[in-house]
Image (spheres, helix red, strand yellow):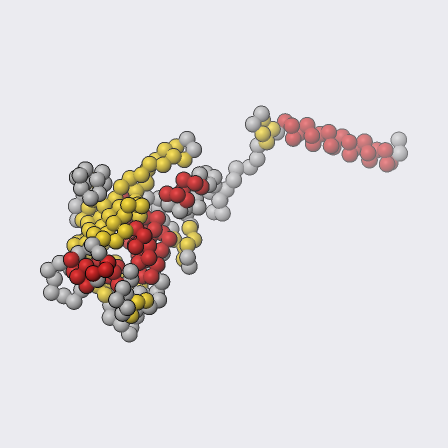
Amino acid sequence: MTRYSKFLTVAAVLVVSLTIFMIAGCSNDGPVGPASVSENGDPAGPPDPDQALWDTVLGMEDLWGADDEVEYNTGVTRLPFPDSPEKLMANFQTIYETMQVYDYLRTMHPDFLTILQQETTDEFPDVGTTLSRYEEQNVHKRMFSTQAVTDPQGNLVPGVQAIVFDVFQQMAPWETTDPDGLFPDAFWAPYQVSILWDRGQNFSTMRVEGVINFYVVSRDFEYKDEAGQFFQMIGQLDLTNIGKATEGTSWGTVKALFR
C-alpha cells in the first residue's frame, strides 16, 4: 500500500468515527448543545416572550427581571418586574428621578386618569378636571426633556434639570375601591410626598407637598405554560398643597405647566 493510500484510509476511518460520535451524541429531540449563559456566567433566562403580548401591554422587548438592564432614551434603568403594588410604586419613584419617559408610559393602564384640583383648573381652564394617559404622555415627554417649554397660556416654563423625592411614604395599607367608583376593582393607598423640581440656578425650585392617592390594578398575562400578573397605575387623586400657606404648588399644577 502506498503512502497516499494509507493517508486516504486513515482519513476515511476518522470521518466514519466522527459520524458515529455525532449520532451517539444526539437524542430523538435533536443534538445536545452546551447550556446558554448570560454575560456574567449565570444560566440565561427564558427566550423572548410573545412580542405581541408585551408590545401591546407594556411596549417591552423582553420580560423584566430583577437584574435586567433595559436601555431607553439616554439612560439604562434597572427595574424589577411590577408583580406587586409596592414594586410598581418603587419603579414610579425611580422613573421620575431618572426622568425616563418610556418607562413611565409602561406604568400606566390605558384607562389612566389624574384627577386635578380646583386650583389647577382655575389656573388652566382649558386643561379640564382630569389628565388622560395620552395627555400624561405629552406632559412627561416635555417635563423629562430638560428643555424649556411653553405652558398652555404661552408662558415660558424653564426646563426641569432634576426631580428629587424627599418624601414618598405610603400612609396606609392598600385597600380595594368601591365597585361603583371612578376606578372600580382597583387597589388604592395614600402617599405622603415632598417632591422638588430643580430648574437650574437661574430659576426657582418648585416643591409639591401633601398627599396623593394612587390607584393600581392587576392584569393577567400568560407566558408559554406559565401565568402571572403585573400591576399598572390607573389613577392619581391630587390632594397636595391643600390648606398650606407656603409658596408650594400642587401635583396637578406642575403637570399642567407641561401640557
